[in-house]
Image (cartoon, rainbow, N blue to C red; front, side, top):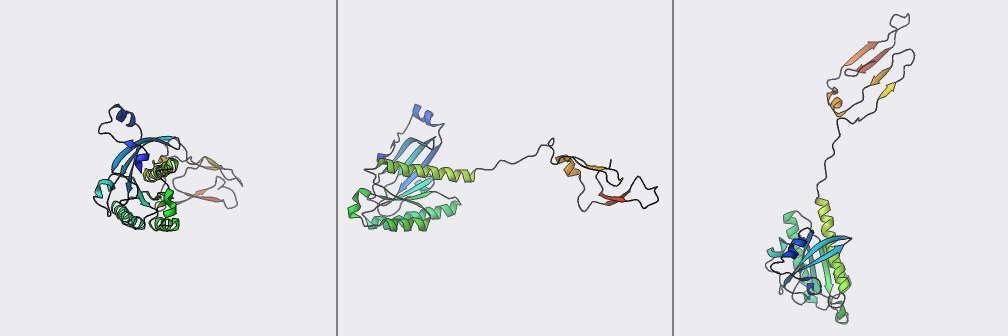
Length: 252
């Protein structure tokens, strides 16, 4: 399938490798049984997906009827494309083995890998043995995206599938990107000064503007003590009103 998408990777890219070194890359492995329309090779292609350049690397495996030597692509790939031929039921049934292997690998590594299930050879629809509904059901069972294409006739459809794989990899990378911690500057106030207007002849009180330093110096609930402060009119005949404050606040 990748023979119509990208180009074979040379052993030494020379100046081209230096050009690609600044472009983020995405590794996609194509899996499936013999007859699904694959070839054993690794390809590279510089693509632009959502206005962002990316170096797409595709490993096109060529297993016979059962998965073999899985470690070579499980440890390399960031996304997996599982392919079957819609005109071969046995080919389709073999996809479950690959999907099981990928699911087991994801569980072991505690990492979610994008997986796309692809029905190939849509140009052979008159010989179809696997319905589209069956493909969608299998994809739903393993939480995969599902597509049907003709690799030999519809380049744009194949390109779209690979671009979707790239988008899925980017989404997974965004999930694992650490969040930058939030710091509050000591010079920046958390609360603005809130004066209390004098009423009934009582002296006015203000709460200090709190910074992070002042906040740490405030007494905790366990350490706070009640303090009774008499009004300046304590000499009057009537009983003087009082203010009850938490120790640690200033009275002006």
